[in-house]
Length: 205
Length: 154
Image (cartoon, rainbow over all chains, first blue to last red; front, side, top):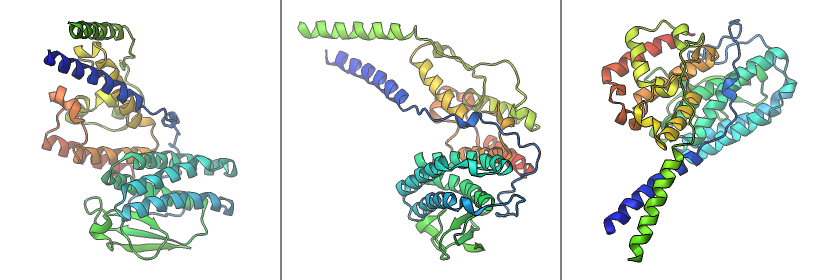
């Protein structure tokens, strides 16, 4: 008698679990189908070795407010990671996504637009992951995001003073860059484990 | 006496629901065409790597899933559909060629990290697909090859 009840309970739970899993489905914008033909090779990005290579596209001061918002979101992520605080980093990710969505692209030239779309498509994915991942994953995506943010800043410009910092140990010793609003080194890749590890590679502004 | 009747009714309900959901259609992720954008058209893939990718990754990360018999039963079918939808959204080897260079490099990085962290292939997947399990040497092979492709993209 009791056995039957347990069996029924298990079956009921299974069905409930399946239903719950389905409800978790996000209906995000499918921005992944936007395929940009980047085959002209003009705007090659060499990411990891050094950031901030000179680009041929002019930047304009109009974009400063927009990049300000993006940088705020980015720094929120960074500071969350420095503090080993996954939730704070996730909040930063959400702020960054908001900044991206509120950016008015009509201010860009055609060339800038194309470049921007390519970068932001990738940066958005990184931010989305940061919103929903455990801290190790957040850091992995922060690595890629930092590169994207640097390229956005190079493209759109900023009047803020920024520091491009380098952590030599991350990525199995290959190293990783990040942007900081403060000169003092506080490592987002290792947090409290190696807070002071890293050095300023370059100052922007 | 009354309890037995309630249990019988619940069982009947479950059976009816179970049979009912079998009639709800599922979309099948299958395709015979090798797309222009397939990763094999982007990179020269050694056959060993191709086999590993197909066995361990393609069911959720390509346009062609191999469906085992139990997939014809709901709710298995829904669950698989969800995995495939999420997997392809994240990474689709059939459309890899259409990704921007930036995105390709980013995805390769993620692939390497996920394999290194033992997050992929999913353990729930390898539980039912023993041939999808990657040995340590398999992992190294894929990681090294991926790393080289990424460097070539610079």
